[in-house]
Amino acid sequence: RRSATAAQDREAQIKADADVLAFETAKFNLRWTQMKEAEEQKSPKLAVLKEDIDRQAEIIVKLGGSKPAEMVTLEEASRAAKIRSDLTFDKLMGMSNEERWIVAQGLGPAFPISLVLSYTLYWALNVPFIAYAYFTTVATGQSTMALVMAGAYATSIPFKPLVYIGAILGTAWTAETVLPLIARFFETFKPANIEKYFDSL
Image (cartoon, rainbow, N blue to C red; front, side, top):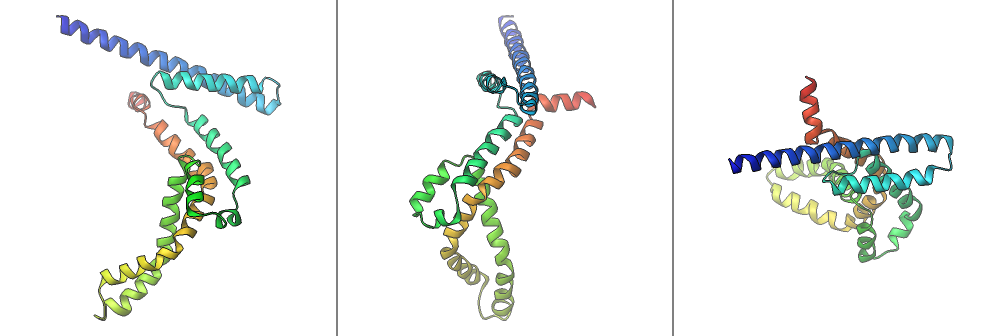
């Protein structure tokens, strides 16, 4: 009986926490709408509303939730604007690898995604050359595929700084276009949203 009562108490507490989180999220959405209206009207209340939104987001995180996709998008867009104004190809070329690494650490979650996209683009551009090497050497028995790929990798080493620089410069675009999509994806597939989806069927 005690274990059953304890289980019921835990379920009740979980439900209560979920209700509080849903309530605080609704408050965030209301503040967000008010902030957008204030932006359009250029209201002097805009700064106060932004502070309220920051506090509301902290409350949601403390309750075990995550920042709503809209706020993640806004933060990354602001960061992207700063990246675009501060970083140029010439500046990055003049930096050492260590300095570029320090810059990359401050770019947030958009950078690793941009780096993956940059490497993907680089190897996609190499496909025609690898295919040519395959048909002229491996297919004729003059070499093996392992040697061709080893040669392709060795050739890529001098281009790694350019790929890295491309990833840093592409972080602004990634923050503005790719990250919002990822944020919305995870927002959609949160457990609470999945339950709502199946309840609507």
